[in-house]
Length: 61
Image 1 (spheres, rainbow, N blue to C red):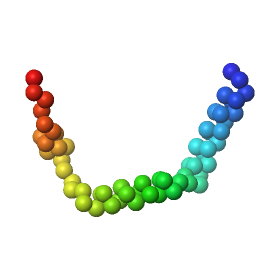
Image 2: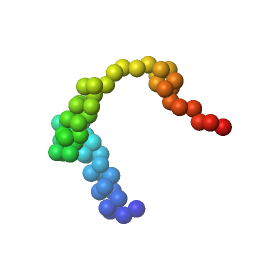
Image 3: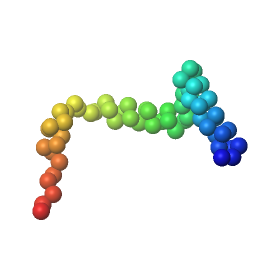
């Protein structure tokens, strides 16, 4: 094990703790992605899983 492995582990744990305490900081790409998902969800309709499965074409053997 080398020093950078230990430092990397510490950084990951510290980042996780800070994200938990203060919340994650969203990038511009993440903000745009959230807006896109919200727009797409406006037209979405709820469907039961069984109905979804029925709509999937069956492969021919």
